[in-house]
Length: 215
Image (cartoon, rainbow, N blue to C red; front, side):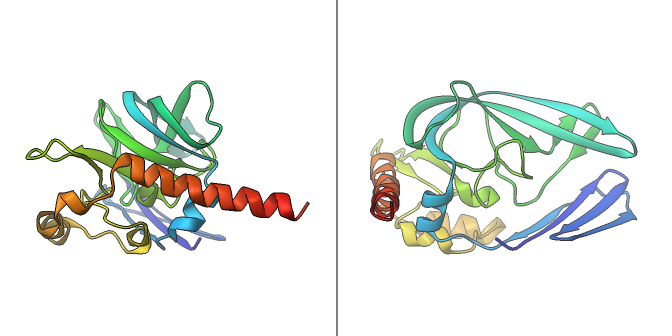
């Protein structure tokens, strides 16, 4: 995965690229991130595990080491369904970013979590990467309820209803464009949590069958 990560933390601007680090100064805590969208089968097969869960609580802490100051947020997830792989008994996602007092670290492109929200999480390298989810926001699928029909459906991080797994590989729209697309979509056509989970399981099953056949 190609990743260009631009992060500003209060007074510091850090540009991280594979094999390169640049440091300059700024007073504006703005961030930008460019992530190449993954193919659905790639994400399903290469995630360490996939779960449907509910965010139970979130806590942020400031970590200072030498001249570095970073904020990490720990997101406790109540696992409601194991879709693929084996998650730990207590699932806590470790995310770069958050707020402690009057200091805030914002990582643009990172998944956004809310206490009480139910989602499907594609977890990869939790605690060992910038984001605990596969391809950052591309690995986070909030579950919503259609107010008219009460039907539950899967949305992307930008709230656009997910109608097909092929849409996983499409760039995430932002701002007014994302809102307009969300309004345009017919929620009845979006995948249900069960539909999405079954498609994930099918990919993992094919991968496991291939691995077994090669041994």
